[in-house]
Length: 189
Image (cartoon, one colour):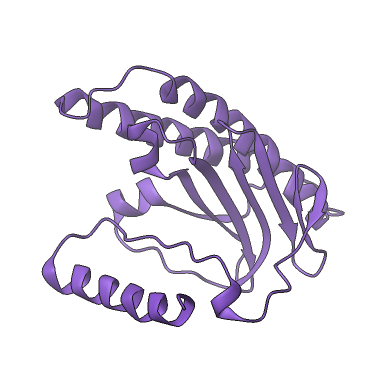
């Protein structure tokens, strides 16, 4: 991209990358999966890697001077340090467990940090065709329509949604369920 690049340009590049990766996810999502079968892990890994490769290639083509941090590449190469340089952070298949089980909450997540500040973000669910976008200071959108957080200020009147995570060691599970129990007693009357 040339000198007169705007944050909107970066957002559009990220949207294009997310939608292209979404096609790969959609195809894999609708394939029959056998969770017990060893090949299932291969399908998830192949989908994850194919999406990350596609996204990074697309971003590098349009933003050659930027840095990149990805789930697959970081896992393979170790920790990548976040610097002040423009850096794309990508989770190519966010919601792996949902993907495996055919639960339609699976997303491509792409963010751009500048000076370590999250500046542009795209989350695309290719199964539900929901595109969440945002530019720092300019609001958030769902499929082009403005969205905002709830105005509810009382926890007891709020909806609680949680994630347990993938770690199953006793310490992590106990800490997670302990936090959940404390929250539940604050919202249930």
